[in-house]
Image (tube, rainbow, N blue to C red; front, side, top):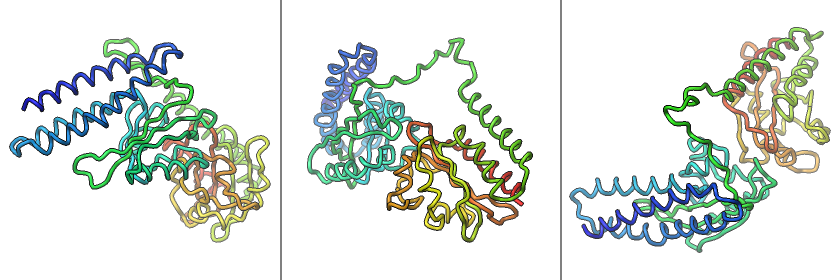
Length: 375
């Protein structure tokens, strides 16, 4: 019992130190290396001292009441993980995210619920994925801690240092990998401040959400106006007019294909200076996503698509998704009365926000209007 009490006191002290580190994020940039060194020291303390200590206690505790004590200890460790000021993720040997702490959700821009169950490599640029996956597998095999520099798709110009170390949670058959993310400039993006319950700003509506909703309504209005004033019901003309509405304001790339059984490329609009001719010359039947949509697939958004060849290859044999630096895409069938008359594909690239579920729903609604306008 004395050892258990001592372990509890050590955890309380650790949580207090983590709170101090969290408050120290506002120090000047020149002082941040000291704060980060202290945070990494605390992570080492958890991995080298607290976790083995916890496992020893778990193996020696009597069976009576052991379940309750285990739950209490797990709650304490979970609280420690959540309050760490550094972005931290727990993954398996395949880089699939098991858990993401709040600092990591802010840093990567992905909600914890979305990231869980998806590969962490999906947040990296394509060139860094294989190396990162290989290093994580080596750590999980017990070959020692590793570190490498990677780049996030949303901020490819800012390198990120990753530190990998293996953990073996009690009751788990295999080791998990603790991934610590550190921006190269040693400045963590602060999380949004939480207003106090009695603050006058606490009851204000979410203006950013209202703005996004208004933007989608404006897009629907523009699309309806373009379709109603289209001088022809020829499918190619209708798709070209619809693509002009979507290009730029909704997607960086707009690719339209007509036909269902054997689609043919009609319109390709890309960013300024992009090689649209290579995409225009591509055979849509070689694009798995287009073929699936032409068969009546649902318009689900793909964020950071894991398969680089999901939209086929260009004339040089390079994956289109890699060449276009695609971070999010929508592939929408244009169906009327259960028959597909075309496929509309939308790409977003670089640091542009990924397609949300609300935007996917809007694209689905516009696809029905476009299909109705096609004679």
